[in-house]
Image 1: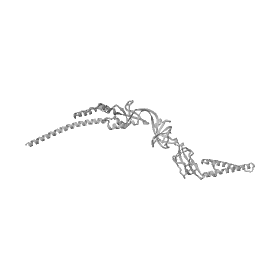
Image 2: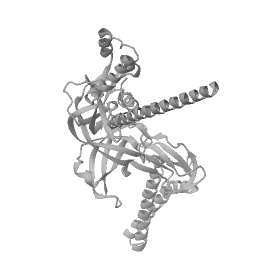
Image 3: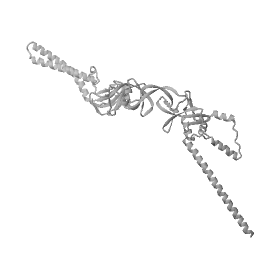
Image 4: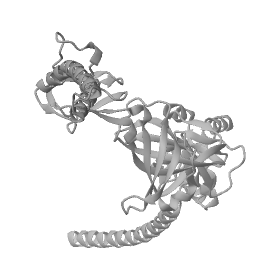
Length: 442
């Protein structure tokens, strides 16, 4: 009997305990659900915030190398960008040729060599050269004989002993020989030989091909042993000292182009070096249906490394604009917009209080009281010291304008104090810090 009573008592006790456990779980679930809803609401409100203020310690500023400066008013030049190529006028290009056909005996230059006007380029040989000199030497004796014959016919004709026809033939023969001698003299001079120096012991079989202009050897068309004549040039010579630009400017930009404007250009394959030119002529017709007009510019200053035919990119200056500018490094891009960072007294904590997040600290303190812990008292001196060590920066959207010599003109979306300090170097790090923290400073 006693055993049965004990079993019944244990069963009643177990049922009572299970009932209490279920009630407790239902209460806890209700409380947890409420907290989850509150947490979701808080997270949604934070997601809607756009972080605009970042706080950095002095150690961070020094480590990253952040520097501060001011917005400066500078004269930036409005420009037009155009592509083109380097060109040498045809009157500064020349082919070295021989007026007489012959076989190339020697070549005295190579590609890239600089030559002066009159410098020997090559020598060519032809047996006909000797024949011309031989005829020039023998024609004098024929002229002497023709003069004597004409004189004899004059005497005979004066004594009515000779026919007039014979005198006329002798006169014509003398005139023909004198004309032939003048022609031979000129041909020999064109061959580069002095007619007065020719004698039977120094007949020349080779001719000299000389450069007609000063310049650089740009092409070689002949080689030793090849046959050349007036239609077959030996080399091409280009005078690069008179290089000019042919810029292709679109129709919409043409009204802004004026003679005398400065042009800065770089080579397509070497954009690190900048050269200077000046507009001297504007074309009056479109180029090959491209809706562009050729603008010709004279290269001034340094011409080292410039060669005819190189492709270039030119920047034409069309006017000065005085505007607010910042260094290029001060501007960061985010979500397709541009920003700068301005030193401010605003703090991320102040922003949170305005948004109504003060209750988080209160809940934390009440939890501490429930668990029997008293909140630690903050030392006012420590708090002030930490505040002085940190620097806060506000992210302000701007609109970019003209860029030149390392500066870019800007138009802020909101007003910036006149003497405000901006971040001129290290803005990228501050922007990354804002993106990583999501605007919450702990």
